[in-house]
Length: 339
View 1 (cartoon, one colour):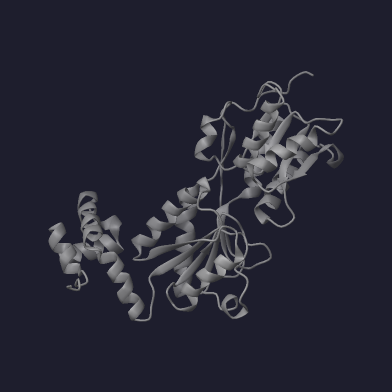
View 2 (cartoon, rainbow, N blue to C red; view 1 turned 90 degrees about the vertical axis):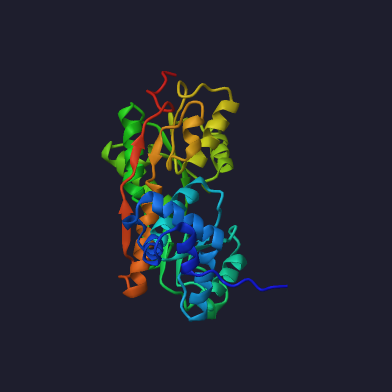
């Protein structure tokens, strides 16, 4: 049985019918290469397997061009859009991406740390909202790291994400402008920094509207569909109901809408609902969900750019890059019903 010879950059250039220099530019500076040429080079790389072999060579030389991404749920609609941005940025600078799906399991996260401690990855992007923990020797020697989408609670790890407080304030102010004064916040948390910041945006808007704290309704939640449905059940045990639900994310909003619909209510005639994230499914709900849109691709690009910068020079601790979100008005919010 013959052993296949590893593909070379010459093989890629020959197959794509371009020069070796053009192949190099297409890999490391794709923005400087025409789209049609870049596509031919990418096809040749895929056919020859050159990218994989190039990574293997870098490992043998004791340096890695891979970035490890730890994500608790790769099925989260936010993750795939952010991944596109960070992967494009990595590729433009000659880096690849390894995805570690932790499934919210600390032991899985610890397994993936072995890539870092054996120099198989140069840096770490954290979607988990917490620093890796477990084996002390591994977790004390983390490489350059950046948190994405969810800040790391109680840590100085640099963070790139949406401005949660400003976005949540936009959402609350929109409900106030529609005439709502009894607004429930669904999804408060003592440990998730992103949820805490969105709660702060809610409070700032209601402070400005002079709605006293005792008239506010705040329900804890995990940011899941089920937690949204359970919040509806909790509120219906009270004497006073809200006229609007401000949800910590779109998944919670889906749960709230399901819970209200199951009780026979007409949305938004009886209750208004607003979310946060603008996941792709938001526009297909009935009614379509008014929400705060996260610039996910931009978050991915900036997170990867910040991490790559940190590989050459240390970043200031606690540095944050916050991107302003947009309000997306659809059909789930209207004036409060006269009941």
